[in-house]
Length: 524
Image (cartoon, rainbow, N blue to C red):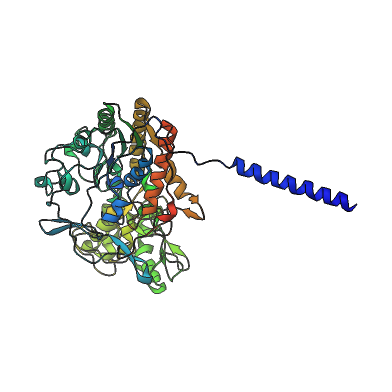
């Protein structure tokens, strides 16, 4: 019996040893990094603030070093990639000087336990007119729209104040009259990345929709800064860009555009933060006594008159126990100023009634379909001034609390009609980008799908989950629009995936855990 036990034990140990040897033999070897059919010798990146590495509402050295093009370039080295130069800022506080005057502020950081985004103290040291010499691989230009990459004199200091030139490009353009595309082509790139078009809708969105949808207008020279670019203009510009970049056989990667209304800049502030007492961290506490007074003196009378005008759904009484929506102006509504003036004249007198009509003619309470812009938080409850009231005067108390007794204005909110305009334009741009990518045989990155993932459950890596939650989600910086360093690492990784899939490369991902989600006040 003992002999049989020993025999079984020997067989068992032999079997275990064999399994261990098999495991060792089957362990996959590290795949060598190869370029596939791509050539990374001369990599050029074109784009806007995302390509530049803009973060926390500023451009600064560390942010540039953590830009997705710079991260990509580091991954390209193992596959034959060459040097990658960037037009670095002078410091890590951010901001710009023009003739010694500050024209762009310093970066944001979280101050103390209040966790309030605050500008880094100090004066910028990067002077626009101190021109950088040499050529640069990263041609990302903060603020650039698609058509700006083709505009001559976009790098001319003389055009900065007139708005025809970009101060960031002025710093490093090869000549005042050149174009961004010309500076890219002059370097004979073998590989390029193109991520452009965000600002063609973003500036409209961050202005609260104060610009104009220029669909149907083929002349960008007539556009305002906050206007939406005509999709036909975008299509022509984009096709010309890619045709020029691929004319000598260069390969590349292009990216579509996310729905920018899913960025934390537009999703962080609730539409209904008004409360009688503190319930959550984002509450705007009005106070029970004030709510009762507002219902009696403002919301009640407005509700009564609007109901008589078949518009009673615009206003409801404020809740004394739960949350209530902000008061906003909706310029898409029929203006009932004249009717309100007539209805209130017998009780308020002609002058006060006219004031009510002017202020509340297009007022309503916000709904879940409205998007309150991140900077609006600091205006809720503050008294409007003559400059920002929308009627040219500072309203008197008690009708002088933004979002509570005075409607938030167009710049504070994106309403459904504006959101629809943004989506329509984005869809058109993305159709162009994908079609051109297929036509030219380029790698294609779906950033829209990535942002959707971040906004609905997040993206997991290791023991971490990245999401689009403001400040805590890890993907976006404190301006709520631009990625954090870790967010730029994620962008680099999805670019790597697209490049590998298209060209048979074996580029490696970067470890997202080594990139911070927030920069400290002082960056070493």
